Image 1 (cartoon, helix red, strand yellow):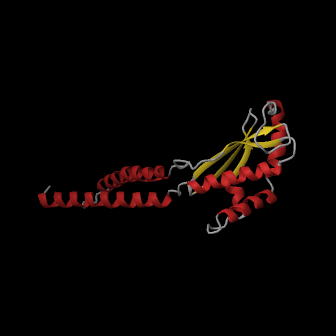
Image 2 (image 1 turned 90 degrees about the vertical axis):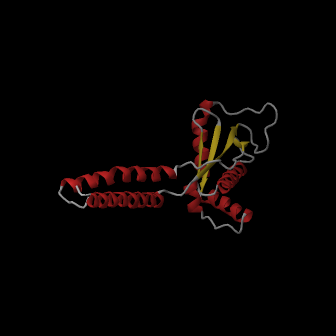
Length: 200
C-alpha cells in the first residue's frame, strides 16, 4: 500500500472515531435524565391520641396491629385534600418557587409504613435536594396534624435532610453511549473494509 494512501486511510479512520465518539457522548448527555434527589422522614405510629413529642411510657403499636392501622393511615393520607394542604404550605413557605399542584405532589411524595415495624416513611423526590427535604418534612408535618387528637396517631421520629447525591445515576447513560460508540464504530469500519470500500 502506498504511503500516501495509508496516511489517508489512517486520517479518515481517526476522524471517524473522534466524530463518532463525540456524537455518542453528546447523545448520551441528551438521553440521560436529570438528577433526582430523594429525602425521607420517619413517623412513629403510636396508640395514644397525640401528635406531640412522646411522653415517658408511650406505647407504640404492636407489629401485629400495623397492617390494618397502616392501611387506614395510608388511605387517609392518599387524598386530594391532604395533598392540597401540603401544596398550600409549600406556597406559604417559598412563594417565589414554581408552584407544585396537588396532582404533581402525588407523583413526588410517597407515604407508606415500613414493613414489620411501627414506622411510617415519607419520601419526596425533587431535582433540588434542599427542596426534596423541605417537601418531605412538610408532608410529614401535615400527616401528624391530620391525626392529632386521634388514636392511633403519628409522631415525628426523624426529619428529612438534603441528600448528598441523586437517587438515580445520569452518568450511566453517558457511559453506555460511549461504550456503544466505541464498539459500533470499529465494527462499522471493519464491515466497510470487508465490502470493498477502499477509502476505509
